[in-house]
Image (cartoon, rainbow, N blue to C red; front, side, top):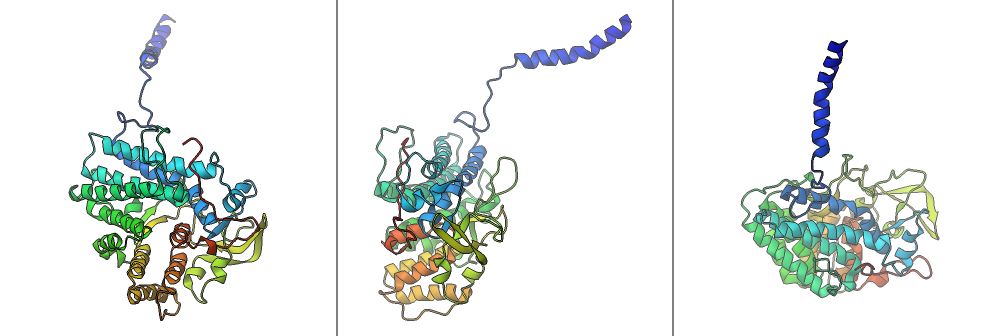
Length: 418
């Protein structure tokens, strides 16, 4: 009996010692979900920035699509999508305003940590400067003339930067990022997701940086800067239309899905294409037939209705474009128009139209060139979130359809807490 007791004690003793040791251990360890300057690695900050770009994307893109009249979001459980977004004013304390703002500034916080870290090399800094500029561009897509915050110290007493000041900050970040990347060697010291496949070395990531530089230059009618940027990435611009940088999604733990996907033949849908996307299209345009299902029924809610379901994405984990070659071609056409080279613009537009199965333009001139570029951007970059910024750029928001009395085209305020 004593022998059995002794054996039992000997078996339990190691377990007791382990429990005693772990019970006395210091539990003040780093939280992997909230890295600080002291605990984060460059890889975790880069991965976190990419992940955070996706986390608020669903609300961000719905905001742009609804206000830009590319789509409706018919959500009976939340009438703000058919109320605030289409009638205004936007609630400065509500999620439609705050969610995309907060998501982008969380990415910016990661980027600032990378830029200021003693562990960062030139490649990491160039990556961070480029992504930070992209986030500020996303903010301005919503707030427009209300500007953005370009002080990153959390001090809300500092005035919010104007739109013009924010654009200067974006340009400065992109140009500094390009300089950093040029001295980063042949490979990054960190890994990027598959969304950056083909753009995952300092040299190829610079193409993305210059693409963003062209985009922001075009929005300011800075045709010279835009042309310089586009010329430097002519190989990408001349590639297949879908070559580019993407948000990628997965079913993995703590990852996100593509919130723009719904089965187009489902009994009820939330994201519906604005009816004018079909009625304004030219017959036989494959950019319509490939991206839209004309349903036999009509979805109706809150005085709005549509019979068009988006089919751009095939499932919940399809990638979403950030920038692709098709956009660069269209930016080049805009530069040609800005420089009164209507023949050059027409040549690019007709190449795109030919691929879409519609007839060539003829007689492109000062009277119709801008409208033709906007038409092609509307159909080639469908559901990618460009239309609202494009219509603002050319002072054409009055041409966006207002479907109900009292509807308007809104501009997002600075969030209440800022």
